[in-house]
Length: 131
Image (cartoon, rainbow, N blue to C red):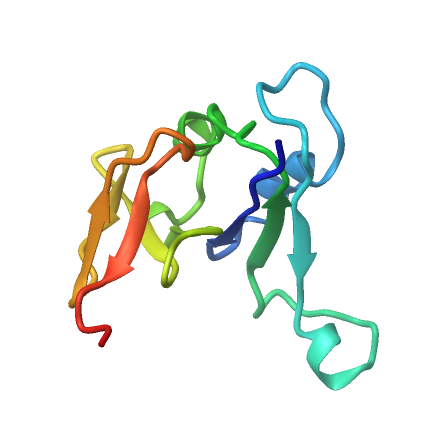
């Protein structure tokens, strides 16, 4: 059964840390690969700088269970800059996780609530101000 989830990782100076996650690796619990989004995409030059530090992936099934633990285990050069944005197909918006004491912890977003849902890894994030 298909179930779509987008994950965005934002982290300063993490090119080396994230590079292995842009290649297939049969030893990982999850198998899709991240794509780096760099500033070359925005001005069309094809060249990038180190000023853009975003990686994205879309999971097409509920097969990314080990991702959060894997991200927590990485040697981030600037762990205070790490943000992980996750949007499951039933979410109203992206949820955000940040590293606190070495663990990825969801950061509360005003006017949202997360409810458990067995078909997702993290549950469903809904806007509470929706009409």
